[in-house]
Length: 99
Image 1 (cartoon, rainbow, N blue to C red):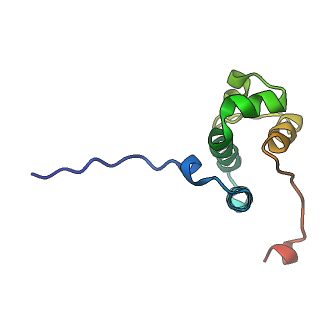
Image 2 (image 1 turned 180 degrees about the vertical axis):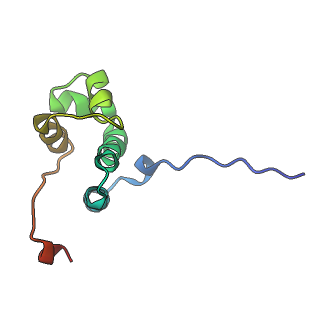
């Protein structure tokens, strides 16, 4: 019998361009499950280097992992600091503009 090893998909390996990162996180925000966005932020932080992102956001590395874990309920301030540390900013558009 011939078996093939399958490696798990790791989105962070493909998040190397600011436009790709912005589109990825925008898609994550479209999901009604808030864990999807937290997971997306974690993927981007991993791609950029968790230690560097944590430092830039003024957080400890463990705190960053906890804040972006599924089921976490990070404060708005924490999310804003992480987004800024990633070199991004969030904005709101009308529903018609998003279509």
